[in-house]
Length: 180
Image (cartoon, rainbow, N blue to C red):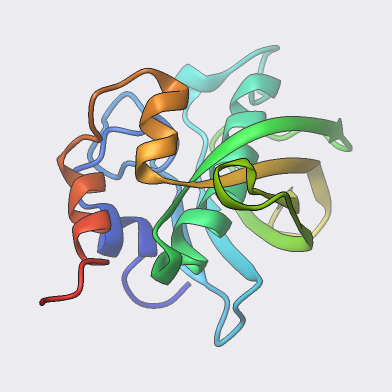
């Protein structure tokens, strides 16, 4: 992959278990733009021994977390100018081939469809995303289809029951303010 990962560029200092590059207990996945595409992200992940299920195999929950984080970044990263927060509505995962510990994986997430329903405060934006992990031979290890809701900061805080976003996220939303 090339350049600075967008998860470092946009949310330096975040504590996400999946995408924080400074959370030493986390997965530290690296997420990148896929060229000029505005519907797809790619990434890298190298599983460690502490992420084992059966001997030599990456835990399925860890694989799900990697895919979920990649899908969430479609909303947060690729659509950053809209300043929306992603929230997972549902997911369906398929495990195709055992993922081996210590073997790097390539990641991808891509928009399948978008649907907007309602208006005003009842407006809902649902994004369907397909994500997958592959081994270095390009075989699919796991794949998932997600439905995400994209919501503005105030709605997100209300839905998850927090007063405000943490500092890295507040900086992201502050960038949306237009000087008056």
